[in-house]
Length: 287
Ligand SMILES: C[S@@+](CC[C@H](N)C(=O)[O-])C[C@H]1O[C@@H](n2cnc3c(N)ncnc32)[C@H](O)[C@@H]1O
Picture 1 (tube, rainbow, N blue to C red):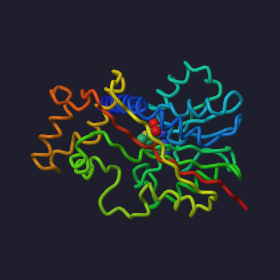
Picture 2: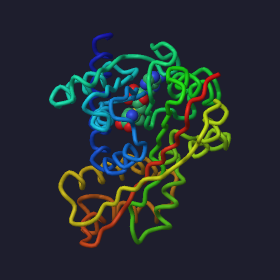
Picture 3: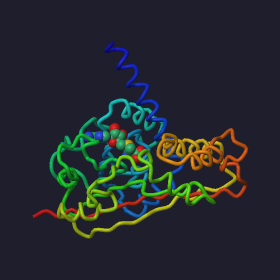
């Protein structure tokens, strides 16, 4: 029984790793632009919190190469195994290390890093990542604790997408369904929404706060990889939404979003879509 549970967890995490990898096919331009905007000093040492399969860890290491170093930290040993495998093939493998750990209690001394990056991890409810507090402040303070004075904390989230050109009302209605608003819930305190991250950084006493949004544009002709990633993203957001939309909306969704449909939207020769990542950063100040 225990063995079966372990096998199923590994399979779940393998599927999750594939999902992150697929998402990276789409978001790489936005993420790389965000890294560039941070102007990380060459030779600096950083931490990627909730690094997952380590793609961002690698891109961050490229930004501080040749002498810099990035540590990827994640709670999941299964995802870290994917990350290590990925990075082994890279010329920067010596500039990267991975460590298992919990963002709620980082396994590092105060003032260890020049900067921190954390993408799609500091979600609220932070309960989703095991934080006992009801608000994100303790998490942000824990990030700031391990950054040297004058260093930076950068927190990023996938912030929006427009994937169904020509169907704005259908897309808006699909986006109000509970699978599409996860990990948020109706009734969540407005100040805990990720677009309020500047407030979290301010309350953690960081300075020089700023938010920026970066776009990935996607357009026909679509490569096989991008087509696969878009199909998976459409399914991830809306495949479970049937019970929360009208019958007419669901029929329309199936007509334009099922790959086997003659009207599959990704087959349009003029298909255009975009997604955005929002980056919030602040400078750590200590007495
Ligand atoms: C949505 S994934 C994002 C992964 C990666 N940053 C990316 O954008 O591809 C969230 C990550 O946070 C990790 N995570 C969840 N709770 C955590 C915790 N308490 N401490 C550290 N990592 C955690 C998960 O294992 C997962 O890899």
